[in-house]
Length: 207
Length: 128
Image (tube, rainbow over all chains, first blue to last red; front, side, top):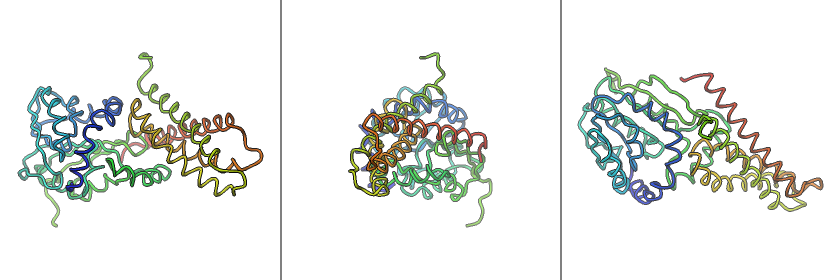
């Protein structure tokens, strides 16, 4: 994310806390519970935001949760304190993870790569910090392959990106381009909301 | 209401939001486009008005229903209802406000049904 992203998310953090998320979290609770139920080993969680997703983490896990915005993390800290396990919050840019190479077993994202400025770069960073065979599990909203919805999402994106996410990203393709093997995509709504499961190849192809 | 499965509650909620938004969009578009305009110009203005209206409608619905699902249905409803309202408003046979509310609501219902059917079709096709 750029400095502009950081400023943007710092600016919207208070509103995001109360406005943009609770009803969506209620509605998506089942999908998210399923997504996070497979947490094991050392886990990286990207774009913790205000920590609304922590409630879906199974207890007793070891998670490093990052976000670019310190204001978001301030909101997340209270929720992190209620988690029954190890949850370490760190301010960090998804495009430039200050984390060691191949030191995580899994990485999770939840509505993250709609907002990271250079998604390919961010995903390559995740690839770097995952151990070979490590898993990437994502719950994301993306562009749609269906023309009417694709057109609407493209039309809305210029406005939406000023206050938050982009609505038209081809995230599954970007995950592949970053070097992951996509093992499954579950569509939850109109090819827009989906769960993506991918794995870092044991042996990376030559650059 | 708690006895009704969440999925059905959300489906009905989304449909209600799309119906209300469609009614508003058709009324707004028919009010904006004056008599004497070419129907295509009216349609374009109506569509833009509908799209603009869909933003506050979607934000309001997001407080109760969530973000993405109602947003898509509301946008589709407002766009179609706005187009219809803008295109037919200059015609001599154009209905009054109540007529536009009913027509816009029907557009919302159709948008909601279209989304539900499209979603069902995609689910049947399964994942990648």
